[in-house]
View 1 (cartoon, rainbow, N blue to C red):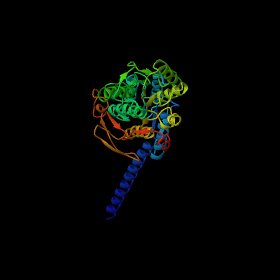
View 2 (cartoon, rainbow, N blue to C red; view 1 turned 180 degrees about the horizontal axis):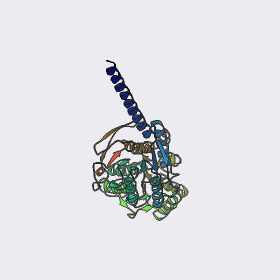
View 3 (cartoon, rainbow, N blue to C red; view 1 turned 60 degrees about the horizontal axis):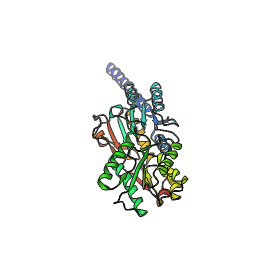
View 4 (cartoon, rainbow, N blue to C red; view 1 turned 90 degrees about the horizontal axis):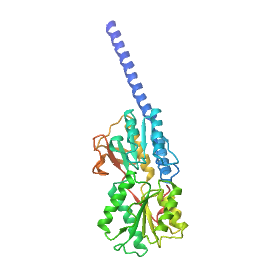
Length: 359
């Protein structure tokens, strides 16, 4: 009887030790998840869009138990982004979330990060599908191309222009190699051919200002001087739009004789709206986009799996679905472990609602 009792006591002690070990292991895993740092890379620092996205990501990470390290350059140069990503690889970070300056130039270094075991996502502007795991996109090219054109059409109509007639327009944005902006421009051109076939693209070569605020103003002034009878300037870039608006202000043009529209934050454009330079423009909630991009990187770095078709209940944001890369480009690389998450909403800003937003 005593032997049986002693044997039972030993078994109980063993179970206690094993259970305690399991509990310590689970606790350690939880701590590891909490210590995950996501390196968050914008195209350029100092831009209202990217600074707002960072503010959203930082607040979200603090609330949800992980860290975001904002690493960018004040110059929108591909080499600077490559250097930042290489530094992150050397530091053995767990996760990266990048807004790419070029559709393919970052592929090599992003694949290097993946090979090093880093979980890689993109947001705002993409790389090739095999160079990252998840892209958090503001919308499909068709959605955003149409939105740009229709914002222009509404503003043209409000100043008495016949949008069914020969409207002269052109595009001013960052550069010819940025995937997102070029896809919106191409989709916008396709939409114009169907919805407004009499419109005339006065500068098919487009104008680029390389996400440089000073250059955006200089290029903007050049456009107005070289094309004095232009009806509509579409700026599908958050640096070119305020730059083009400032150029119009400098040259004495207003929304009554020149329609300027595009994508930029409400804070960047509020004064131009109230001064009558720009009537209407749009964007999406870049704070949510920054938060979601970093969350998806953290989610993967914490050991969870994602595939096309996966649905994730994201705290404070809602349920998102991983879709095929083909939603952004029918010719895109597709694989089960590489996909796109779309933001649900986009917003048009005017004098009537701009003060309801602060980003």
